[in-house]
Image (cartoon, rainbow, N blue to C red; front, side, top):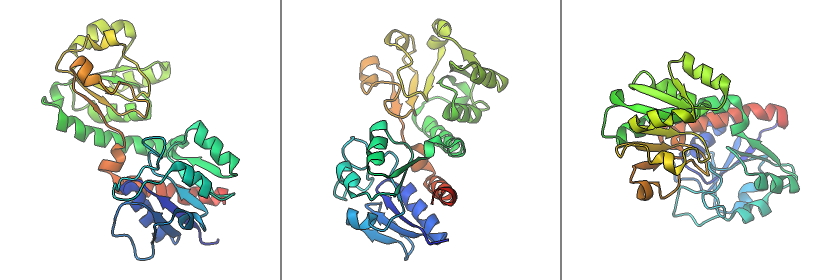
Length: 290
């Protein structure tokens, strides 16, 4: 099999560890605007985007691809910004573009350039492993930001998908009680089997006033303003959902409740494991798509 070439762009430490893993597997690896990192000597560090992409079979985009919708996400703020428009214009027909997730508009751009999109978030294996890393990072943040013990916590969990169930599995042995709001009946039954109490919206009046923690995993508004007002003033809110998130930016100012938006937990707390996970999946999928 021919030696594969990958260009790894921007992002946080996950990109660096993915680069090291793939280089150890014999790939040609070029990094563009990644963090300053003691990379293996064989990894090429390139400051020209067209040059970085020129020979690449695969391009690994950062997570998220962009934070402002205009520029590529780069954790290294000292690097000059890279406009997404410049990235799209530098692609070559036949290249594979790998990312955690892509918007419909971004997917359409890739189709127009005859590039193949690969999204990690659509793989059950990646979603499960990434959810575990997210739950571990969340646990650290809960302990860091709350002034009360987890053993005394009454938690309302919004959503029982991959991230919600992973968080519940980790927190259930530690907490006083966990309630979960989940629409899917099968997910409700799974939660109940594990000792998590499924609730409906009609239960809010008896549950919300006694919660001192809300964890949201749903990328949409779930609690209405009048329901948020039922939460006690000591309640801490943790939003780990993807954009557009589950609570507004002015949550703390508007409702006087501590609210923490926590994107990218695997990249902050488990960059080695998360980066290597991306590398291993890319290594596997190339057997089928190249």
